[in-house]
Image 1 (cartoon, rainbow, N blue to C red):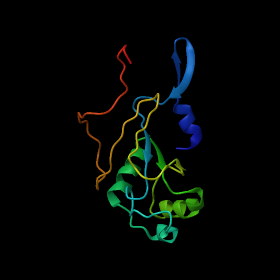
Image 2: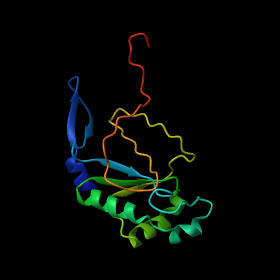
Image 3: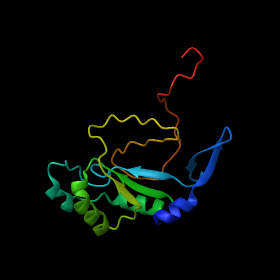
Image 4: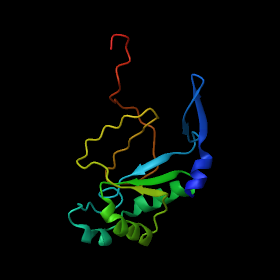
Length: 148
């Protein structure tokens, strides 16, 4: 799916009589996938020569390409820098990953807490890519009580 097709999927959204940022249909997910330690060996930016020979995680390749083929949007969101773009694109294409783009420069260090005005779902990678399932769990949210 090209960027143009992604733009065509976006729906206009109105809140309080004003246009706000457009949204994808409910059946299309916007996947942001880490690279190192998630779809392949965990390689630090300080050792870019290893990026071309990283071992791919086969279940990640299979699942991401399935999601892509189902019409979902696939972006890699990585702590690698723009200086690593060439190696990264070569490696992804060599292994057959289907994707729409790469966002470089994700902050390093983990312990992420994403705050956004759009729906955000987070899934921690623990060694295996599978179909996603629903699970009830405790999360941190903003206190919306009147006293806040």
